[in-house]
Image 1: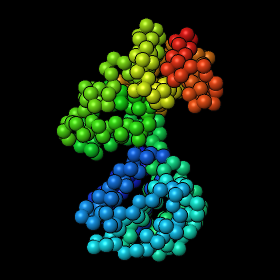
Image 2 (image 1 turned 30 degrees about the vertical axis):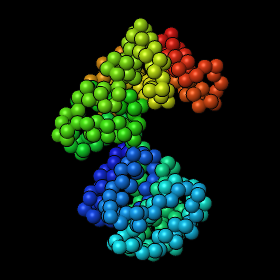
Image 3 (image 1 turned 135 degrees about the vertical axis):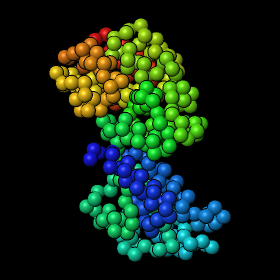
Image 4 (image 1 turned 120 degrees about the vertical axis):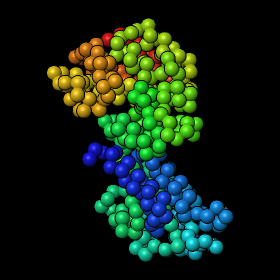
Length: 341
């Protein structure tokens, strides 16, 4: 199963278990897709805690400012006027001595639910602490949803939430979020909050609630670049640079990098049918013509130079390479380089 798909399936299974009040004494929540981790933590809090006794039985700790002893002292207590207490350790990747938890994990207190919240890089599976978490309770790995799987996984997420979505707003949402699954989920929360369950999400919903301009968005910029429509691309670029605080350069560069990497893959599949390309690259029928046109317009060394320009932009934004201008200037320089090819 593709990387990312299995983590979303596991996420659904775990959410259903919690919904059915099946609560483990220990949870290790780790991995890159922070939005899934946040939703699981919120669900655990909802199921374990009673609002009337929450102030007594909810204990939250953070990273470097907490020692294992602090957590152990609280975890071994009994809850006050409730069946269970919840102990959450956020930023657990900064724990100085995680192995101090081994004895507790071998014999967790039944009336305590301990959540070890470890975003980012996962604990190596061969470490004693990782094996202890697996034995003590539930380990959820929020693996990054791969670029190829983003569209089908997001589509399934929307369906699971009780909605449907049209192809164009789906792709606009994904492209505008740089294909980052957690960012997409965060944006969808805004839509779900404003659109009745059971509805079909349309372009106007994405424009209104996510804040994507109908004419000036990363989706439109990609299309203009693919077709080498210089005037249109510069018009969109000017809008972005004039509103740079609302259009983070890392997200835009990430979206463009993902887009042109797919264009390069389409070039390598010359001679294949549309259906084969759609399956292998992970693009929809709605966009196949555009990708084919982009692959023709950026043939040979041109596509390599596009990738180099985007990588150079990323390095300048991060301060790894020197740049004379700010974010808007760096992005403008990059787009003009691409248009000049």
